[in-house]
Amino acid sequence: MKISVVLITKNEAHNIRECLESVSWCDRAIIVDSGSTDGTVETARAMGAEVHETATWPGFGPQKNLALSKVQTEWVLSIDADERVTPALRDEILSAINANEADAYDMPRLSRFCGRFMRHSGWYPDRLTRVFRVGKARFTDDIVHENVVTDGPIGHLQTPLLHYTYDNFSQVLGKIDHYSTLGARQAFQRGKSASVASAWGHGAWAFLRTYLLRRGFMDGPQGLAVALMNGQASYYKYIKLWLLHQQAKQPAASGDRPAH
Image 1 (cartoon, rainbow, N blue to C red):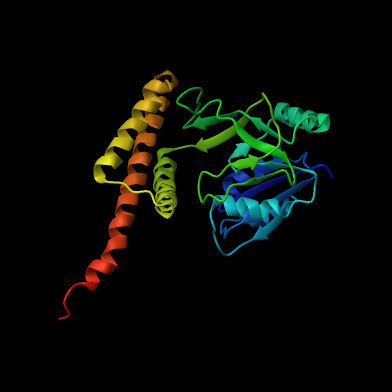
Image 2: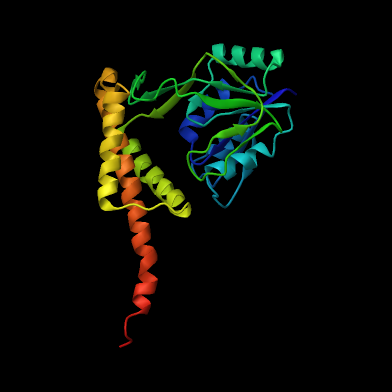
């Protein structure tokens, strides 16, 4: 066996079948699931995937490293449930690992936002290291926005990985809340601080950077929506970080109050 695909899931029944079909050429499919209740696990196992269920959620990086620890092949491909490997990318991956010229390979990722594949807004080419030799790379232990680190040379693939990220604004709002919370917690753990004013500044800068500097205006209405989303996500991350610091001060402050 040459290559395994690894992914982590939670309630991905709407994605998992098409995702696994796009990587059916891999020798093994290894999934670490953190408490799905929508049939994700059953569907994946019915399709031949090896599923490991966990009761805890340590964060994206540690969870992906757990999946990586289950791999017994020489190479690994890491994807998310909302990503698809096209036949052209499959052929390029297989050609690359057979050529054996690098220990890891990155690839561009083309993401779709509410019906449109985004070519600007900082969303493309969005190169990510997703194919690597086992033992030569691992995921960072970040609870969110993890990435692959390797000491070896990295080759560059040209065919994009397709990313079906947001279908509607309900998903957008949900992920803004979820990821801003994780980002705030991670920043708090690293000793970073924020204020209401800095939260506003981060949000404004994220919007301007996406829409003007990264030419989000060239992605039409979706480009404006992404810029607004980035601005909101950044603002919420830093205002939540500020609130975490306010909450951390409360026990000491309440302890100074006189007893009644």
